[in-house]
Length: 178
Picture 1 (spheres, rainbow, N blue to C red):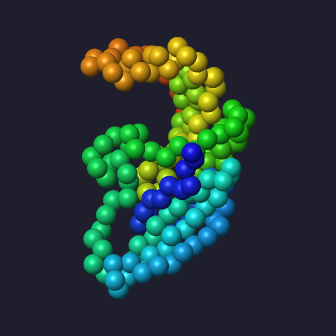
Picture 2 (picture 1 turned 120 degrees about the vertical axis):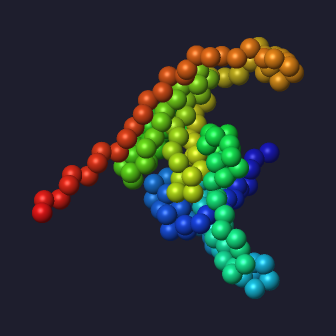
């Protein structure tokens, strides 16, 4: 079974749209406008992520809606990486293309080789960590056995080795001459 869509709330629709449509390359395909909290309204924007998957943003409007932090981890007091959104990349070349697109749109990107997959990470305008991930090897019976052992262990062995990471920072635009 696949996901149909994942939805998050935003407090800055234009910045979020720019990130997901322009910097990430997802196509806006539908917007529902519905009643919200009896007298308010909400936009539910759907973006095609490819391969039949959708990603959605909520833009909420009501005078009694309290201010909120849309960051799904830091808003709960957790490190940014805990709750995050990961999209699939079919190849390392596709992963690099996503990285290049994010950097070209001004986003800092980190690429990490996890040993069984390679991922790139950037933060969206809401403070949510977004990932593109490419699986680089096939899981076998031994992988599944180790996974169950680790799940059941009260004190699993911790791998303290830092994974290989590369950082990509957009080039600063040259200062204009006065």
